Image (cartoon, rainbow, N blue to C red; front, side):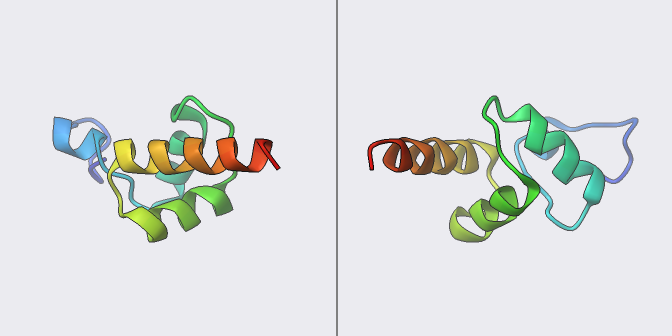
Length: 68
């Protein structure tokens, strides 16, 4: 998401900025899965800032944790 919250470009909506607190709040709720800010930051550091990659990483992580 861009710093200008009134103008959003599609590519900005596909990226997660862990430097912006408001983005962490929005993405923590907006990924469609329950995730803490700390888990979100760790996922971005693990797979990059692509929202799709982060979402997939977190789903896989939650799935593997559930099977233990």
